[in-house]
Length: 532
Image 1 (cartoon, rainbow, N blue to C red):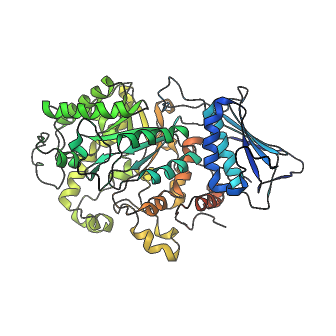
Image 2: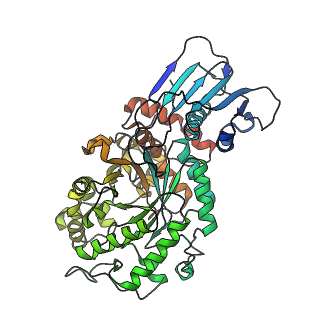
Image 3: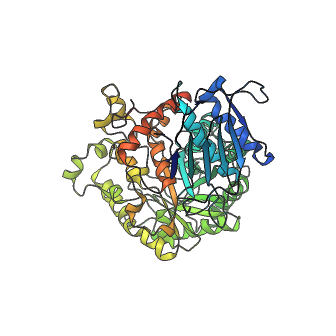
């Protein structure tokens, strides 16, 4: 039984003996100039797993072959739906086929993207095999269910240096993720250079930021792995870093009784001409620097702004982004500012998120919230703020927009692992790693998420995106420990359209620890996964 993730839709094992040793050595080849970049990228991805078993370019030594080919006859497979991250009128063609024969593994696709997806399947097939194993003659054919399969990384709160980001992009590529959503700005930091406003990042050098050249190079690196970068400039809330760098911006109008009540930074007032011009300057640079067609404008958790002030802010920013040639994406709260057919709203506040105590006694029974410093007054304000969230999805559907699924209950991977799946020697880590006010969950719980459970029309789902916010992260090891093994499960669901049966999934998932070790990536050895 193979352990490829995402699990291919069609897999056939042929009868007869196999004499293709997984140990290799392996030769990577392609005769098509259109696949030259794919071949270079696949070689780079293979090296941590094969090492010396991967023959160098031009080697005359004998070996089995990993062959890359464009082939228009690869069958279409399942229909892909959703929003194409490259901005095309329809989903990109990522259909692929992998054929294992006597002396080679043939990776075919109708496009370079399809060939690349085939190669990541071949990588897993070879990399997960035992050293003395032979690969049976077999065929894989597959295509994604959702066109948009994303991963959000919060580099605002805990900066992710370029070398670490490269490692995360490679990991995402292994699991056929095709969108890297970079949360670049928040209260804690502003992580992208804005050439027109050097003062904005003058104090960011020590904490880390991406220069113009680094941001461009990061996009190129991701693009070579068929991943589109979507930058997020979070407005009108989450703006403390911006206010600290550029003081004097007026606060947005606050609802009666809320002004100055809680320790949040006042959102920006986009009705103010000076603020509006400043935001346009920022967005003009971000849009000019961004290769992909999308820019995320935030819109979440704008605590302390009137409904009218929020609507003004969102509509101003949306209009700016469109005038600058990009398509805006925003968190689901943006639906309250009105929504149209060209809008994409990122769904995150599901019923579990609104599971907040209603009395002081109920709050006292929630150590996760008490430990995070929540007071009864603050919880009441949060309940009022999140109350409209129950209607956000309906507003998006009524307005003709699309929903990008990132439900906090399952796809926020900064949540803690449940104590019942923590090995005894990792119990302390499980108790402290992750955002304290989210309910800890098992890997099985995350892997069991089904996009269909939200009862949304399939044709209105833009795609699926896992998120990892970094309020509580100290280092790269903690980051990957939260991601793994759960990211592989979410990526599998995003590609396949639904979860695998848990019994099969837990066995296959455990085998992937070999790939993570090859790459030097820390992971959490949850006991509900079969690591044997």
